Amino acid sequence: MKEQVKASLENIRGMLQADGGDVELVDVTDDGVVKVKLTGRCGSCPMSQMTLKMGVERQLKQDVPGVREVVSV
Image (cartoon, rainbow, N blue to C red):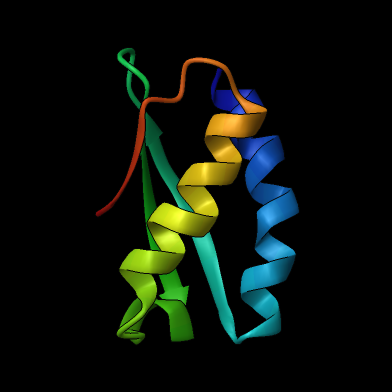
């Protein structure tokens, strides 16, 4: 599952980089929790939680069966 998550994040990354941010994969747990770190402008943006849930998490759930949740660490 970790390789699938990495591939999906590569597709998402362009959207974030267009706004001066990025996403870094930290871990994928056995129970489907993906831990990421938002960097650049995304790390300090007040809308980062919405980006995380409505953008990153939604796309990962769509692309990778078994992803239950995405959390920022």
